[in-house]
Image (cartoon, rainbow, N blue to C red; front, top):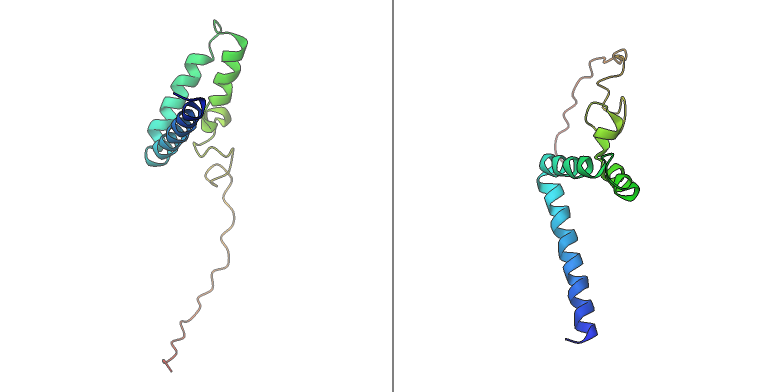
Length: 101
């Protein structure tokens, strides 16, 4: 096997692996978050090396980092935790139907 064929096989393998991971995250988001949280928890243990613990913290899903309502963007990103805003003045507006021309 030539070096070009080896490099080509490695690049194609990486592209296929990355595509599979992205499809997995898109089609099964809860399962992928759970899997990522388990891998992160396994790496972020006191007995692990510093590099493994940093990798575990980096891989930690966002909602686990923020501790918010699960949206992953931090507190009040969905408006569920924030105090209720006063309702906008929703005056009734009549519908205007126009004939086709």
